[in-house]
Image (cartoon, rainbow, N blue to C red; front, side):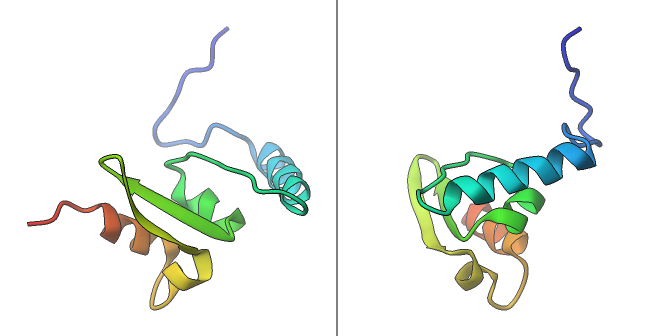
Length: 85
């Protein structure tokens, strides 16, 4: 049976999340790992560097700690992606 997405629930269970984070951490020890995601909460847990693309253009390329200054990584990314007047 195909997985059905429930927008109020995560795709992975807690054990799968832990295992995926461990695998990504191991892989990132000696190489770059590129992840494309809208799951900003998960991104904040694992990313050391973040590139934000809006309308096909890079609007941020920085260490996640730099983007977090003064707030959460999620808030920083949302602010970068909000429509400009």
